[in-house]
Image (tube, rainbow, N blue to C red; front, side, top):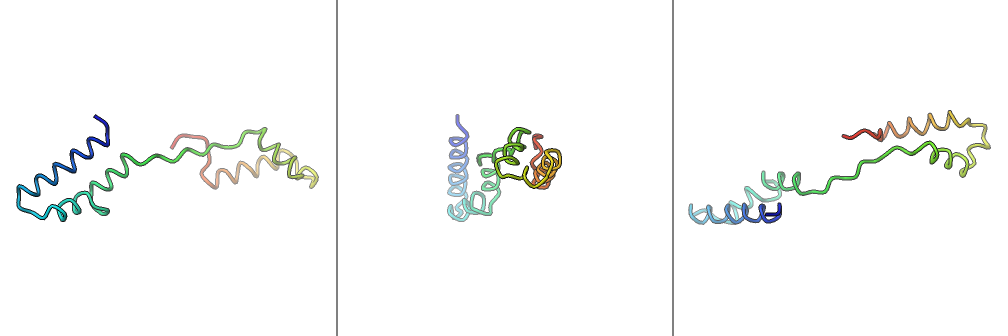
Length: 99
């Protein structure tokens, strides 16, 4: 059974239990499964696609940027440019390590 099917079964079970208890099904479902309910948060955490991990540039990509943007004309050494690029990546949380 897929995750989507499991979620639908749970939704139907909540609806059925609310009917049996004489509760307003819309209110019960909204409380449990609505935008601010616990099931919504669980569903979002469980089914939402995870954003791809950002990876650091390779040394070759950094050098290509340095040369193609003519930073090499400004007397910026390859090492200094690479150091700055790595510092910028780190400041944005791009480390290459799994989160």
